[in-house]
Length: 199
Image 1 (cartoon, rainbow, N blue to C red):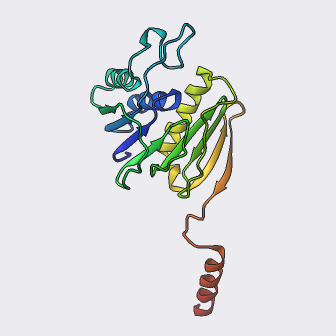
Image 2 (cartoon, rainbow, N blue to C red; image 1 turned 30 degrees about the horizontal axis):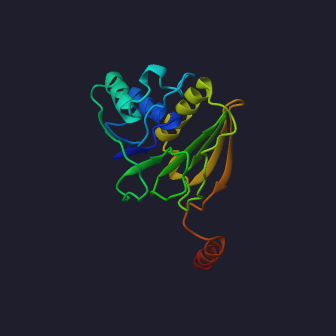
């Protein structure tokens, strides 16, 4: 069970993940943050929102869906932009398009077409996914949500790395990994040498 989870950014990824967490009952409580409203458009609204929800704050819609799917979930929505880091007691999931400010997120998630990125590195690379290359496809959005839920269930964030999930081919690639033992290779070598001498 994830303790004190927070989702920052309730666009396509953050909103579907919030709904997915409500369905999965992986969390007892959830705080969601987004300053935006569903945009007015004659075209289809961005998934999972509907055209007739235009002008309504995204967090209000997600709160409603989540409570409907899981009445026991304690969910709170905050219509505000987050630019300051949270303290370490929260499990922050950063789903913002623009991740240019460090908010002390446990994981950072981005989806571009069928490419899903999950970053649990402690040293954050500031990435701006504001302009996506590929259009948003509900099939890949739902697949991405399933992958993220499995990632959280298996506590894969404990291994600090930066993963790319190819949702089209169902492949996973580690793009970058931190030394989760907390040693530099030089320090590890010297400590192993000491252990050999002592044995």
